[in-house]
Image: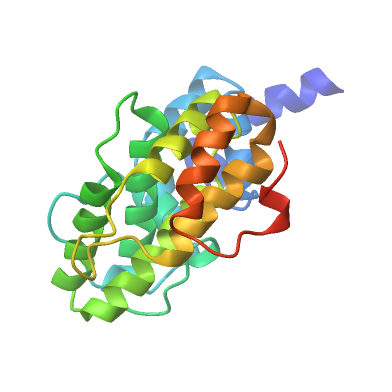
Amino acid sequence: MGGEVEELIGILPDHILIEIFIRLPVTQLGLVACVSKRWTGIFRGDHLWQIAIAQTWPTAVTRKRWPGPIPRSSGRRRFMALYVSNNIVTSGSETDELAGHAYLYLKEQLELSNSPPPSSILHGTMIDQFIACGLSRDGAHKVVSEIWMAVINNLEENHHTFLLLKRLAKEGDLFLPYPYSRSYEVLWRVYDKLFTDFRDCFSRTDYCNLLGYVRSRFQPLPSTWLGY
């Protein structure tokens, strides 16, 4: 029976397969794309993603576009940005799609680069994008802070992330003028993730050094951060 089903699926035209694929949960799309070379080709193409966008977010075509170095990209990239803006970072404004693109941009810079730019440059790039889209300085700072929090919360728990968080924790950008300095909440979350999720990764010397650095910024410290 399994072979017969595979043969039947194999003779379905691409447009029928696309109608099936766009109804699957987003979390399963990566697995489905690996089933066969033909299916991989469909997922690499733009047609599937354009249809998925039109059916899932029919008003997306009328939304404000984004200027500058976070460019328009393929249908797949735009689908990912829209998904993020509706499920992970919800700014509730015309810049929703930009929030999704900024999230992808920041996450890729932090996760994929062996030497990502300083956080102040990443933060400032996103701030300028939102201001260019019409947000106030306060509005841009609020949305970008939400994006930072969402990215930090969704980083892989591995050695690269541990080293990245230590670097972010020690970067002194508090002297930058508002809105180009990271928010207090973002800095707090970086330390909180280090001292809770990555506590076992520290050597005693590293732990004591970073704790001393934290004491100069935050008081009082949570009890969960204390004790090596």
